[in-house]
Image (tube, rainbow, N blue to C red; front, side, top):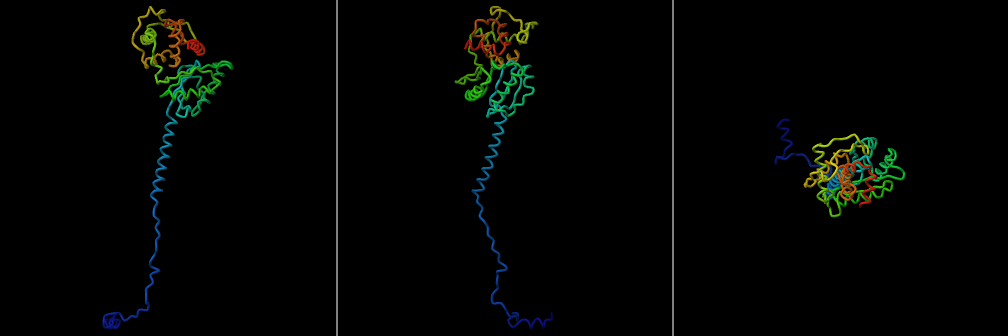
Length: 289
């Protein structure tokens, strides 16, 4: 554009000589309104807290569902160990002797309620001729952290009418353990002597059989034994049960019968009791209780 032409556009005050055809400028096409909603922080916090609680509850459920809460030993001559969760459902079944290996080989009891599991044991016992329609005896040991937890399981066991069970709790009402052996010096010493026998392996196994197991040749009278005065610890008690190939519940019943019956006075008698049939032991226990 030439300078002369440009000067024609400007007036004397240096303003453009262009008429303003619009009295006002509309901003409708240029101004936009945005509506922002205020976030509800309380609702967000509540949802977050609820999610955390649900995750924690699910975690606790998984923990309690898979963690042993009470352990049972069930002796019907095969001896088995059953671990229950807090909801009294089976989470594991294991054998305590060779007979039990075959007995539980085809049992799938995972997550099974206790009563249903006992019914299964009853049916299996009939099938394997450990039970009859008129005689189904079992020795059951209940091992929990408190007397209350054991007593709840005992109530469930008593509801099972098919098996006649003698149930022994690990704790008494005053929370005393069954391993707090309160017996005479000789009785403690017999246990100690039997433990010493298995530790030293000083006696020979003879070929005569009793109840399917070998009878151990040991001294025949208490007078011929040099008794120890040391108390029997829980660990020694459990080790002795393992040596005798029986459950600690059965060993505790054997100990009770040995202490309270005058018919059993020697270590040979003690081991004979340990090899006895469960039904015979329950009958002996019932007459002495």
